[in-house]
Image (cartoon, rainbow, N blue to C red; front, side, top):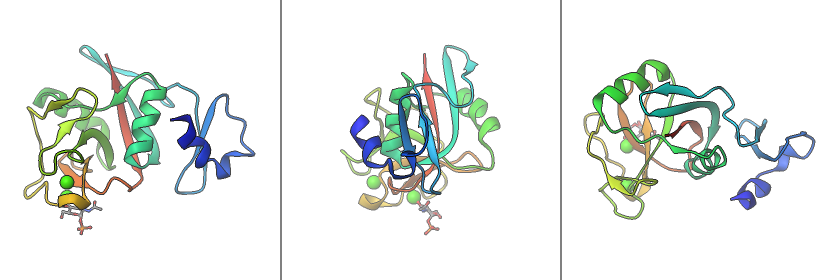
Length: 157
Ligand code: GN1
Ligand code: CA
Ligand code: CA
C-alpha cells in the first residue's frame, strides 16, 4: 500500500507530509497522515469521512485503510438518505465492486452482497469496463471505470 503512494509521489517530493503523500490528478500533492482531512461525522453506529480530493478507486480504498477505515458501504435507505444530503453536487467512490464477479456487485470490505441498492435506472451497465461503484451527484448509484479519480467516502464503526 505504501508502495503505491511512493510510486505516485512525483509532486509530493517538495511537500512536507508527516507520513505519506499522493499526487492528485490535478497535480496537487495530498498528504495522507492517517487522519480524516475533514472530520469524522457520526450517524448511528458509524463514522464517515467525506474526502474532497480525487483519487482512483484503489487509491481511495488504500487512503481509507490509512485512516483505519474502509470505503462507504450503504446498508439501508436511512443511511443513503443521511449520506445523500451531504454529498449532493459531487461524485464519490463507495466500497462496492464486481471485479471478481462480473455483473454481481458486492461490498469489498465486508465481503457481502448488496442488500439495499440505489442504482440509477439502467445501471449497472458497464460490463467489464465498469467495476467500481460510484455515487452520482443526485445520490443514485452507477458502475464506473475504476481508474477515474473522484471524491470518496470512508466509514468506520
Ligand atoms: C456515463 O459518459 P457516458 O454518458 O458515456 C458513465 C456510465 C453511466 C452512464 C449513464 C465514466 O457514461 O458509467 O452508465 O453515464 N460513465 C462514467 O448514462 O461515469
Ligand atoms: Ca462490471
Ligand atoms: Ca455505468
